[in-house]
Length: 214
Image 1 (tube, rainbow, N blue to C red):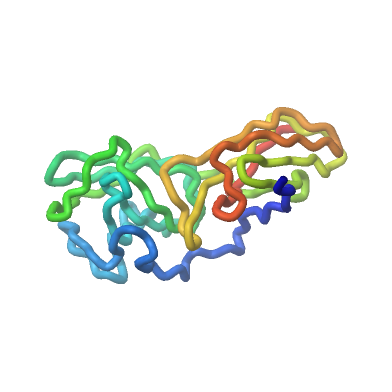
Image 2 (tube, rainbow, N blue to C red; image 1 turned 180 degrees about the vertical axis):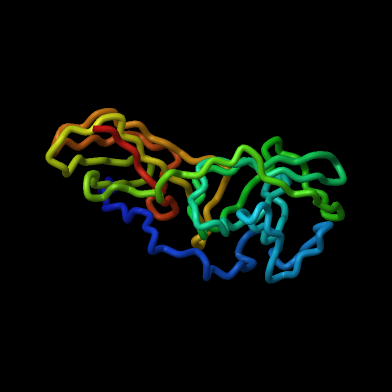
C-alpha cells in the first residue's frame, strides 16, 4: 500500500515566469495562426492580464490555448473569449496564480481547425483573489497519495469549512480549465482527516491553496 507523503504547497516563490514553452505537449507551440499575428516571443496580451502564447489541438481534437497570467494578481475566475472561422469560442479560467502558465480547452469542445484563424480575444467576468493564494501551512499540514488527500490542523484552535484546491500539471504547466476541490469540514486542534480526492495524483498534482474559517 502506498504511504502518504508530505505535499509541498504552492508558494509565491515558485515562479513560472522563466518556463520556456516547448514541444513536450501533443500540439505545436511554435505554430501561430492568430489574426493579430503575434510574435513568437510576445504572444497576445488580453486586457493587460492573460497572455496567449500559442494554440493547438487536444487529444480529442478540441481547440486548446496555452496562456500565461501576466498580472501581478492571482485570478480566481475569468472567461477568455474569441472568434474563429467556425464561430465564437469560450475558455473558462479558474485558480491561476500570477505568472503561471496553463493549458485551456474550449468549453464546448469546439473542434480544432488546423487552417482556421482565431481573433478578437477578450476577458470577461474576471474575479481576482483578495490576497495571494496560500496553503496556510502554519495552520494546515497536508499529505497525500494517489486519490487521497489528508489535512491536519496543527494550530491551537478549531478551524471550520476547510477546503483544499488543486490542479494537475505537466512540466510546470497547469492543465485544464477546472480546479478540483475537496471539503474537509471542521477540524479540532491536532485532528487529521483523510479523504478521497479523485483527480489527485501524487506526482502531477499541485495544491494551489486552502481555505478555512475560525
